[in-house]
Image 1 (cartoon, one colour):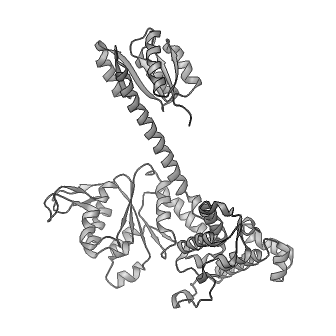
Image 2 (tube, rainbow, N blue to C red):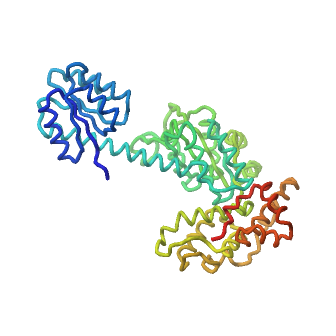
Image 3 (cartoon, rainbow, N blue to C red):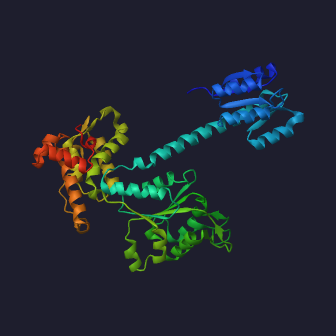
Length: 462
């Protein structure tokens, strides 16, 4: 790891050398100068993690030097050296953004302690930046894998949702990635730097969920020994993700409706409403319209939540995305078996994965790939490495056997695209061989590949 760099600026060379000696013991790479003007030039040419400057200097004083540095860059931690008589000026400097001050004359500890605090601040900032970058990468739209017409439509709606402040309702079967979509919308919205708070409405007992969501005041019930902030308050200025919203008890639905309509709520036992600014994204695998008919979900709440609806298709309806997802999960998990030096998956194994109907959707596909990585001898995953259930001929459930209603033109498009994808996988990406399997001319197949927007890289041979 590279050393942190520090710049020391003081018109007294002896002070520069004294501070330099202390910083070098702390492990910093130190540059010194007795001129604040020269200090500005050094900042222009190099990046410093820490800058220590005298407050009183001829020409450009420490405050002016600080202002100049901030015009050039804003990431360095700035500390002022000040004599006893100028401590009020140093306090004013801290109000402007200077991190701390060192009194003059100083002992080694009087330099070392604020420097260590400053370096810890710098380390935390760097860690937070790295974590934020990791989160933004992980939950970017690009990390939601797929190129089928259905998933491209999801991407289109997600982009509109991210640029909006409207409530979003994400629906889809278990395992289709509803929380991933919610996080991606948050991470690409104006609230990205704020908190994303998750409430699983199906996992918290009915007697506790109101307190978890809205909080309570001291003495509101037995065991309420102190005020407690709810998750709605924790999400203020950020995003509140209500997972499994269809499980929320009817009395709480009324209170959630008030939060959505008025932006306010009551803690349990309180009489004073509290206001928050939250963006709500809800998700469910239930048919909420049927729940409305069954009187288990409020119709007014449904329409308040369903401002921007996003329906995630089950994996069986976008089988052409399976090769992309399989390759993604191979890259994600192959580090768990580095000694096998995995290079890919055999076409027979890929075809078997495409033939399976996935009641557990993407989550089940990922589990299947992770299982295969554990059981393969490598370097290529074979059909026999897959979980046995993915290879069995299974009769689909009555629900799965239902063909989703859609325009005949769309059904024909989907079927033709899936059939050509299957032929390309069988042929290892060889267009001539795929054309022979399909009994059409090669030129005709090439034209269909273009018209159906099929990505040949997803069906390339191992």
